Length: 449
Image (tube, rainbow, N blue to C red; front, side, top):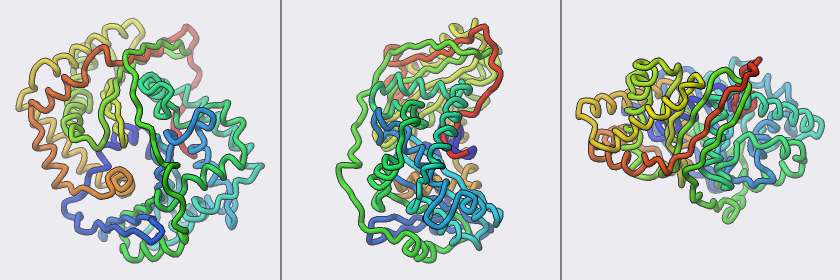
């Protein structure tokens, strides 16, 4: 996963996928090609750049125990050469015109994207189509890249505040594929063969499961013409390959892991509803009120009042048919128990009585403002377009989203809190420091760089 999409992507995707600009909503357009490939765009004429992404509706949840990590490994390997470009030529193709090329893999999606000046939009489509449709998977590069990703995996383990979320998801989803780490396992990585990658890619990279999303200074009809030219795919396979098993979810699992770190890390979480559930709006408000920003209850209590933590927040990770809600805090080891009780004090207070109208209105304003500000990023607009199409098959207008947030009542927030905040449903992961000091702090991203 690239720097753009590391922790911010994890925590804000649910906000980005449904937002749209009121003034620019009329510029959103969608076309479906005869082969099932979808093209969505948002024209923003006052900028000089475009962000283009090729989205595939596949991720780590579409893997099994024996090939967990293959989606992410394919994401790496497509940059290692195609039928007409070698590794250096792929890198230079976009960087030589001042652009940026990268990719990321998540639980349900894979995205290859480029940010370029508007005059190089076609070049971006050319390169993106080349790496997604024509990867060579050269054997020599495959063996080298195994070592690279294994180092990335080790790097992730050295980033406790990020990797703890993988441990929590394993506790919540158990043996279901949603509990698999996106990056996979070292055991699997060492045995992947070229034929494994080719078979998995051909099974999942089908036009009916692909979306081309673009935002910036572009014309939709030109984007469609380029898509037809650079993605001349047949109708592809459909059906059972994309049938996903809905997770049952686990609860009440506790795990303590000793690590050579100086700070303890605590993550509490539970399974909740999907991104398509109407209760997502009260949950978004509840999450913002509880643990998003300096004015949140958790921040004001645990950090400002007691000084127990530098970082504390809540999060909601909503997927197509499931979701999770939780709280993270990094603190000194002796304060773990106190922080846990302070967290539960806030959760239980929210489940006991409605919030005040003043706090509710402030939280709604904060949530709406953060959504609108995120739209100043062209890359965020592209992410919103692609993920919205994969999740909803449409782009909801900002007016609609704002209306849904405005309609959230104190009773709605209370009902969600009562339904979610139950101690016996929460799992707990603790990273406990050993006496050994950590020599490095890694970056636990799951992408090419």
